[in-house]
Image 1 (cartoon, helix red, strand yellow):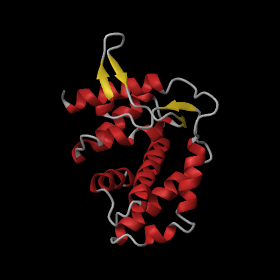
Image 2 (cartoon, helix red, strand yellow):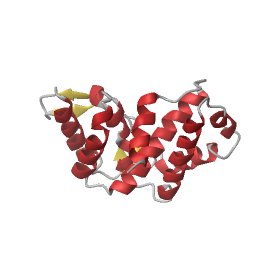
Image 3 (tube, rainbow, N blue to C red):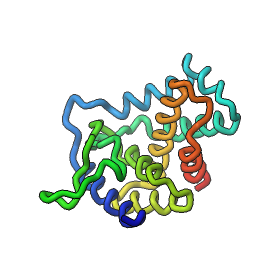
Image 4 (cartoon, one colour):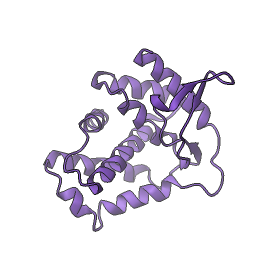
Length: 180
């Protein structure tokens, strides 16, 4: 399926999924955001500081600054947390079904990164972001901040796993969003 058609389908599916309020008891994006921000200033900060590239360290600080702007309003929508093209199947009861959810209560802007990163195309980053925010009816600045928070989350995971360089596709996505 062509990339642009796939992005639209994913955005429409995400709009349906996030239209529901999250049930009580789910993990909270607010808790996750607080943990990430704590890691950027706590003992784990040494791991970030050990990244080989100074521009990547600065990029993560910029992602944390963007996240800090929205962290006090984490949202209450039901999030999939891993919705990308490989987790969408054609079906009979619905045209498209999302599989393999990692349920989370939060802001739908946190859901956009997988659609930007999976089947990555640097030339489509902003087009994909704009389409998804339009279809979901999201405020672009809030969605931008939550997407940068998602880049931060993925980067912190990679650093804790021993990586000393960030994922180049996610660096490109973050730089595109920060340049807006």
